[in-house]
Length: 458
Image (cartoon, rainbow, N blue to C red; front, side, top):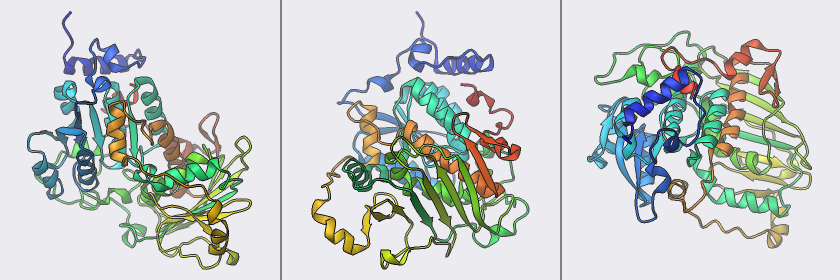
């Protein structure tokens, strides 16, 4: 029997989605061909395609290659002539190059085992959905997606397709991950009722963001594929305030400080305290609110209900210069300069930083008193990148799969709606709806712009 071409397989997916007839099973089975991604042997290298190869993507790609377990077969970026993408291109001259990820998959899906996605937040969803529908393992930079509904679809697709998934919250393979796990199991971290998370470094939109009333416009760079850059999001003029790095400032494309740093600060608390989804989200403070750009500073509170024998827990997020959480005097001298968190349990209080930074018991005198009884933590493990590649080969289990990282990012999606609209939101985790607020409910899962619907129907 003649096997279908890659292009015809993607056409099949589009037609099936259009008629609502596509029940997702591993794409290799649906399409009558066996995906090599599921059967990479320990002696073979994973064939990797990278989408988004400048700045963060360039660093991610270097780390993937440094694992020693992959070879780069394709590079995709909307701005291949941009200076920020030249390093990746020079490092991998043998890789085929594309500006449109759809064309890359049409031509090369049979030659790709795994995909790394490090584009702006609003573009993650379509690329990851298409890759998984074709049976490809996916690594997606944080935050996982731009909206609550996109995250829900990615979680479902990951489960149904059976591919390996990983979100790029790199500290989830570091010392904090193993420490938090061990201390929770040992009962050191328990009965947590309050968490303060903070990120007070200057952000790109600080200053100009409070007064902007429209999107600026600059001359389009040569070779720039702007329609693909905009993807499913609204189209605004090209601007240096958007590309290559300032897109994070804007509600239509980025996720602000919360989506940027939240996955590095709250990931272990969310996972090991089994926080799930909140029942209310309150914008306690919005400094310099703007319809287009994130606030200059914000304080957002989340109320998480009881979970089994774990008590209800309030998580409060602080961002913006000088907008730091209060610290009780009995905790002693506590420095809040770097991004981090303070975790308040019934008996103990902990301070931690971001990424792989480990927790410290507060005050220091309490830590010195307990240090002999604290469980030892074996944090010798593969890096976050090597963990993903080895999981593609069946040798490890991915530490931040979409079933874990997706719900974490849905918390941030809800927080961003509160940052945008203000006030208090009531959320029903059973129905995944915001109650009594039509404007907020519409932002949970906004429709894509015309021409990008196929990815929402897979």
